[in-house]
Amino acid sequence: MSDAPRVAVLVPVHEQAAYLPRALESLLAQEDTAWEAVVVDDGSRDPTAVAAAVPADPRVRLVRTAGNRGLGAALNRALDETSAPTVAYLPADDVWFPDHLATVLDRLADPAVVLVRSELLEPADPPYAQLVQVAHRRTPERWTERAELETDDLDRLMWSRVAARGSTTGTGRVTCAWTQHPGQRSRAIREAFDGGPNVFRSRYRVAGPLRFASTDGTELDEVARYARFRSREHPVADDGLSVLVAGELAFNPERVLALAERGHRLTGLWTPDGLGDSTVGPLPFGSVPDVDRDRWEDGVRELAPDVVWAQLNWRAVPLAHRVRTAFPGLPFVWHFKEAPQRSLVRGEWPLLADLVCGADAVLLATEEERDWFALALSGRVDPARLGVLDGDLPKREWLDAPLSPKLSDADGQPHTAVAGRPSGLDLDWVLALADRGVHTHLYGQVRAPGAKGSWTGWLDEALARAPGFVHVHPAVGPQDWVRELSRHDAGWLHRFDSANGGDLRRASWDDLNSPARLPVLLAAGLPLLQQANPGSLVSVERVLHADGTGLFYRSADDVAAALHEEVATRAGQAAALAARERHVFDAHADRLVDLFRSLAR
Image (cartoon, rainbow, N blue to C red; front, side, top):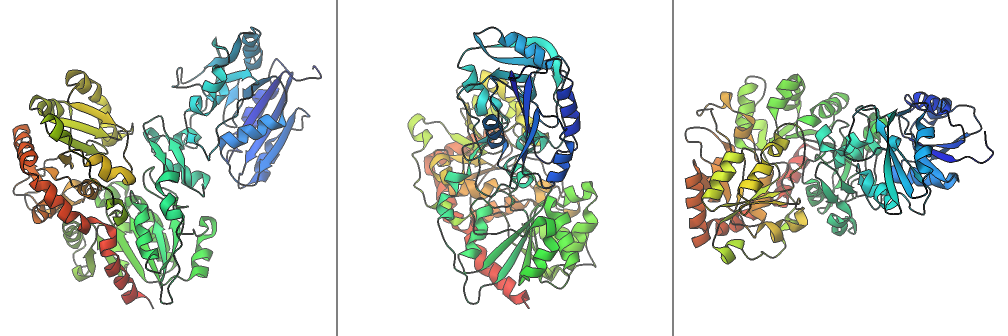
């Protein structure tokens, strides 16, 4: 072996010690032996397991960070620890074949080539080069670190900057394997694998706000979004309650600060099984410290909260049930939004039923959901103990922004907004609207499994066939709801056919639900487009009739007629602006606190 190594091999690892021996064996088996390697243990909770996997070879060194700092920081640490003129990457869960280094070095013998990409055993063509595939000349470039951006797109984190310094080439040979498994970093990021910012936050225990992007469509800057909240202090009042928030906080997590602003002390205990857009801690806006989830029972015992406020959706059911079981003496409020049908499918209905029957108080999102549970648990639960409060209403603060001029005032054509997945919209429907001069603006579409990603099957054709009437926009955060969405004339709620015929025993999730987009669209002063379902019990239809904020339809002609009347009169906008103050969490915080006080012992 030459005294001076030709290749620096960077081996990042976090909580994947079981994979590491396989990766390092493939390194030791390389035909080209002129390498140095640094294993960077990026804050694994069991560092001894990582250390045990590192071979006693003088070419391999182990360094460790005290806590998880992220992939970019780990790779930059490894760059600092090495000096070879070529850099290659061997993540702990991947494998090189014996000819990998020799093959990439052969391509780098061309002085014009700065970056080489080998072929993968599988999958054959990932959307961007994976770490295990790439070798490049050492350059001044550094990996983007967590404070600037976390993303699965390695082009954005490093490759594009290196590639700008010369030419790139492929080896044309399969010399490595990218191991796909549930614990991959990229899967924690990508919505297509049930990842997202909060799955990532939970897995890597990210303590601050994220700047986050996914190749499935998410772009999120929590630093900017929550700056106003992070700068505030919330003194605890003399009579303030200690509230343990257990579970997850869905789309509008900052709503809980309405309680902190009233002098109450909040502490979080979060489900480890959340979805990417269901918020868990550490909360990006601060002010809510966490119970240590590795010793949560001791933490709750030490905290001795006045009340447990467990919430919100079906993913939180198992954790809420564990807390209730472990601490039956603590006052316990179960706040549930959606969806009992998912708990039935997952086999968790017994847990959900125990929560509804055993909690000191239960809050449900809608009157219809309350009545559904009263029927489903008839004889087990007192209906008088079931209250109604949508647990995912936004913070009132987001309403304080000026409305924007209407697009229809400029072109005379109605414009509609879809915030989130286009539930119930399809190619035929969108084209029928376009034929009637109605614009559809889609905000924040992401590639995800199931209904959330159904738009991928029709959007390209819709854009091609109605290019002037179908529009795609980035996701709009709460700080921009009013400014951006108020340009339109109405917003779409879920489009569905109800088949319950007035019998809640037949009710679907859509029948019971209060869509999270409803208060968002109302915040911008938009009336809501809702398919009429005469003869059925549909929660959102009842609310829209009561508020006067609904534009009801059965056909595309109905939609066009209702929108043209709205453009002419702005009656729906006036109703929405009058109702929106009732659809924020702050409007209900005092009665929630009154409930907590009535239970605290």
